[in-house]
Image 1 (cartoon, rainbow over the protein chains, first blue to last red):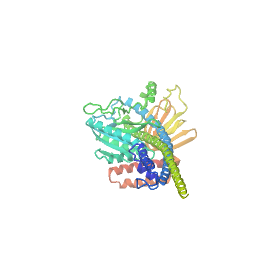
Image 2: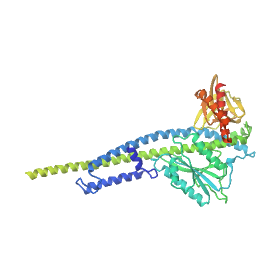
Image 3: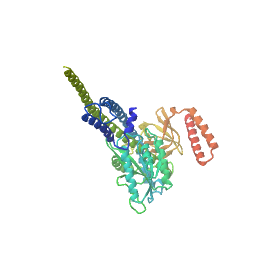
Length: 371
Length: 146
């Protein structure tokens, strides 16, 4: 029951401290009534007996604190699992990058053209925005949606058309309320993202790009930096290019200023250094590679797999950041609840003592009057 | 994390080092084995230590890892196999299941279901989907029996 009350107080769009405002408002109302009316009746018709009201408030705050603490522990446990999932999927994507790089080197000698590497002048951009399923995660959803809005404004300035593919209930409901943003929607399955979930998104993106409805696909997700910090980033998914920027028909660069580029060599700084070293030794090996099938066919099959993998990693990182944000928000909520309970208890005790004192004074005055 | 591969040894190594990875986990990591048989699209391919560097696409089928007298069998949905020159093999599979976790009765049921769908399919899309179902289930079947 109190859980329901909690969700009605806290809207996921606003940052956590707005709930504090609600508490503080109630709190100040009680304080006011305490100071101006030593008697039990008050200005506000809703408060009949301040003492009982205070007790109820203390009970509800205690309940809230238990809930937020439980949510914090649950999120903490889940973050670990999410991080492990990200780490577990790394060998796969690294091997894939590995081979893609070596094939690309060989393929440059031949005329291999895969539809996914097609660089065209950009007229329309698809933005895949990954948000969370539930609220109570601090500013997580707000940040990523703000970034999406900023990117849309940028694209409009460049005179480009856009469409939004939203993954996650929070993003979906945000877009529903804003019908002027053209959108295509998904609802994430919830729970830990699997290859099946990312396949759905990958299929859609693939068909949009190959049918030339959009010329560039960007992925907006929250990168997990650390348990207390996460960063919304924009990552160009398609076209897959070895280097260089994507330009629109006027030759202006269409990339976001902080775009994370898909590099066929590697994505993380650490790996890049290692690659430099080992390409020296493996150069002699590559020309000897035997292809069981036509390199073009292999590339054709590898690209979608790589795309799928990228999206899966983005989903996993997004989930990890959401859980970390929830953990932090709930931890703050618990601390605030503890503080609030302390101050409420103080007021309650003072009120109780003043009531007792008043009664004693009345009795003593009454006794004196009799004498 | 992957370290850079050791340079090509002058003599033939005695064991094959296999990395068998899935998108969400690493099934085998740097396991030293004698032989791996992968279901390539061009047929079953055996990889022994000292195999020439190869890239092959895999079709749904049986993957078996031979270590001495021990054979571990997995059914994989599809993927890639890369053999490098120093007897390192990377096998990437989209989905892999150890054979003992597959129920033969379900496989038979699935096979008959999809064969039926294929016969009654009207549109090209339905036909293609049914054909894929038949292929996978018959591969499962032969993996279980073979």
